[in-house]
Length: 257
Image (tube, rainbow, N blue to C red; front, side, top):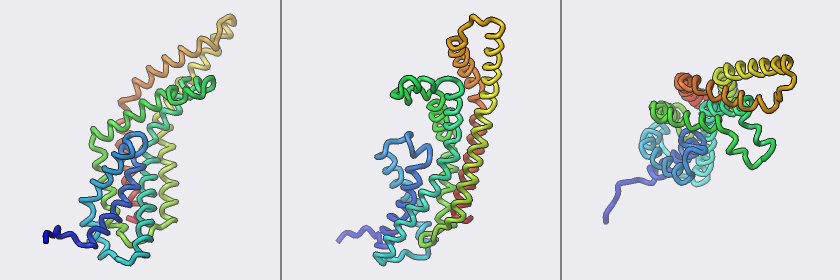
């Protein structure tokens, strides 16, 4: 009879690794979220789990085949993957969040007040920043750094070990603080200039009260926003590199490494 040479322990180990990898891939940009369809994310997780399985089994010291323990471990691996994915999602989505803030301040999101159905179409800068961040992560090879950092979690937090809720909460809180600071660094200068533009338009109405400020402010602020975004785009790459390193550090923090 033809034998593949694959043991039951290896199959169970692969499924446990896939549980962690799948939950992580589902959330982490550029694999998760709107970047890839669900079917592609599942196939990506299946592919990523293959090379990680031997090291994960070796680091675990052996996989228990008890059914109840396997169900418990499967749930634990999903929880670990979700925690690691949330850390990466929070940090790597800071660029998109900065775009959403610029959308509001620059007037692109004003269309939602008149037609809620235009919400997706109105988020212009946010969608551009999200696409730009995904492309930069792929082109620069930052995804390899993130993937390598994730693979080390099987050594620091092997299969069979539990997830520390205290470390997870602390790390996610720090990730939120880092992401908020990144949003301010990306969107802050543009917001400050747009605020000065609002002040200038306000002073203009005092000089010429007949000017319709409500009509004039839209093209001025939108044009100025597009100009500033074009100038600021080259600065996103180094910011994204820092967020990539922060994502790896956050995963290590959750794993206890």
